[in-house]
Length: 310
Image (cartoon, rainbow, N blue to C red; front, side, top):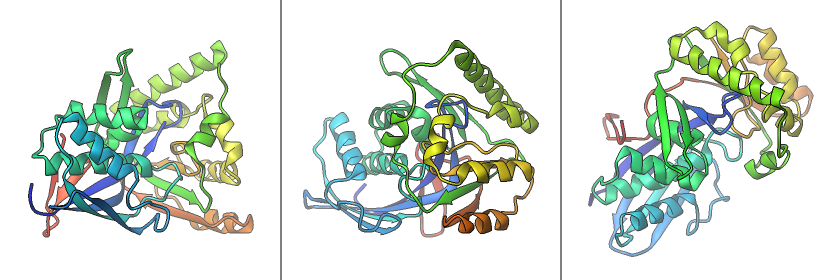
């Protein structure tokens, strides 16, 4: 592709309670990337919105993914101007890193003439991210389940979001780095905790596939990562309990945190949550977002969308 084009990449919420490193969903909070191929060999990123001043314009995840894609294709890396409008907050557990990776891969895919299959795009993104749970919904949309075999081959399944299921993200004003969130997790688990995780993950998959949303109240409880990460997230355990008492179906930690994902089949009044957080000196954003069925896609001037990988 010789002319400029415009990509839109959804945010994601991974883990989904017991689906640690295995499950995620796509949220209607989008980063946008305008890609203009150039004759120069330089690749330059310009950022607006979230992350201004935090992104090295010459060395970042988007450029890394762009370069790795051309390396995978055994092609020279053409220059490009990459203009990012970021809406996904950094280090909050709602997919800013996976959106950057998928944006870079998608940009290279388009510039080079759309050579990547769905499997190749997923394989490359997973290799960069380390796990499929965030990149799958960023690429495919919907609710995605994934795993890898011993040769790092990725297997996945996409579930259409159940009718009536809504999402609200509670985003505090402090970051939580994924590396720090992983450091607090134990090296091993008891048999009881392993069985608890497996049984609840299985029930969660069944609930999402069947649309029996009431099952999510139990199915999304977790003993694998949340008990260790919540102490790193001031105020969020209390806020989670508040939304559950207000009628939410579930409120798992989103990704590695610090965001909490609230899933519900009814509207959630977030005003009391924001007021309580303010009393604890926490500035809280509460965003009601759709769970979207499309992953990364092209958009034109008329807002017509075309998915890159079905």
